[in-house]
Length: 132
Image 1 (cartoon, rainbow, N blue to C red):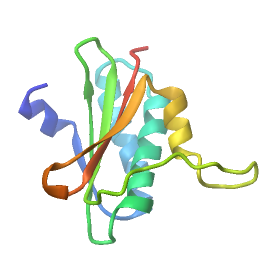
Image 2: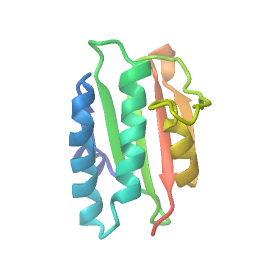
Image 3: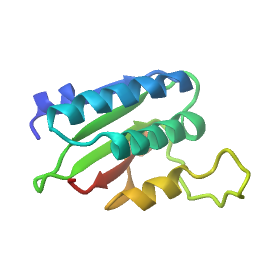
Image 4: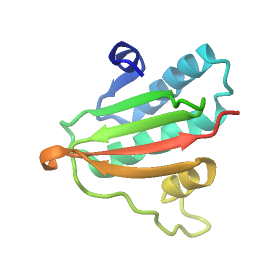
């Protein structure tokens, strides 16, 4: 993907959990341009951004969300934040309202992972969803 397309499909997310709805609207807009169903992409994007805002970022750090297509037509998403703390899948009990984010990502994605940014300046959590 070229640099101009990357910028078009990028959203800086302020540190406020209420903006997760804006991320879902952004995902719907982008996936709609590609004639893709948006339900699973919205779910995965919500979980990735919520985790970054809740666990990985200081209150004054922004999070960057990016979405695009791979060469084989799959959908990729990534969330960049300013901490080096690695996400981990938690074990949630049956009545807990939290702790299932990465489990959901793991269940619906072809793959997901983490890559550190140079100079210990943060990380990117990415997910790839098969083309539907």
